[in-house]
Image (cartoon, rainbow, N blue to C red; front, top):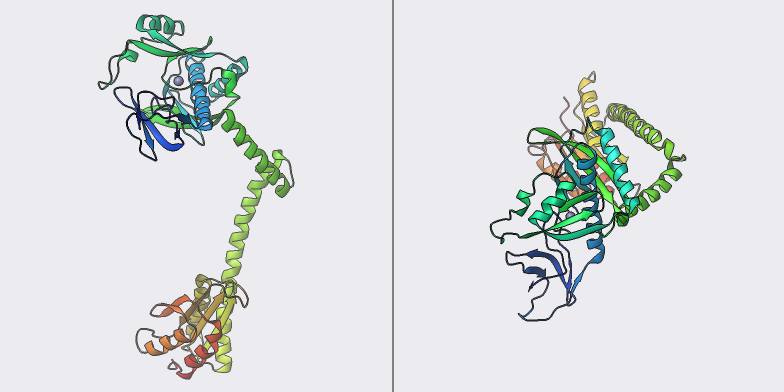
Length: 398
Ligand SMILES: [Zn+2]
């Protein structure tokens, strides 16, 4: 739907477009064309000449106004109060952090950035008026000179598809800054509520070390804080200490967890070796051609480790023996949940092809392999029949 003009802000100047409704139908984007008309990307079509009521999603617009205005104040403090630290570009997002790119090396300006944050929040407390004014080139140059800005010549150049500009819209922040801008702003710095720098990253621009400064302001900052307060309550309860101890305690828990993991892995390897060797000892003692082991909570990796140990023990025995091993696992005792199996000691694609297929049918197993057949276990109750099959056709004694 194209309108001669609109109260919805179209994409431009780095600020995302407004969303909202036209006579109740949603529009998800709007852009201004070269003639100044505004196109609304709407979920339904309209007829030329239809009269429409444009409603803007106010929460989104207000959030953009707060963050865009906060960026003005940050850029102004950096350039006016800190030896001309210029803003290279900025990003205004609709969620998470917004960012300003400054032409200074963050490793040399850590303290400066903290000062800028304090000065921005002083300006918030000061309730400085933010006022846009239409100005001629001459007026603009005179006003901008007061704020120590260089030539305004470039500001009157416009893309070729647009008509030349006779006037500029200059946004004044009382006693702080004057800057040409087409965006949307809150009427007073007090309405920024507060501005918090949330991250400093060193970036390269034209081979120079620069700063990407992330920040959050206004209602978005209050909601972020509300979330942190909630997380804080949960941490206090689970860590049994106040905020001053969280970092140390969390670091210790992570380190302990890693150490426990290493210890558990080592113990698991020892256990798997013992189980594998036990299978071979049982086969030797009872002269069994095939053995079965079932583990609750094991995965295919663990079953393979047990079989590795059994295979190694069988080969290392005084009288090396060929042994068939069926290893099965379930997530829980007697449950109907997932299970897995690994079978070793038979030539599943050669001489023992039919035997392997019969065992798979008995346990309703789904899977494959040559020296080891492994996959999903369907019916644990079929193991008895599977063991009969594996024992009935004994492997050749080595
Ligand atoms: Zn602006």
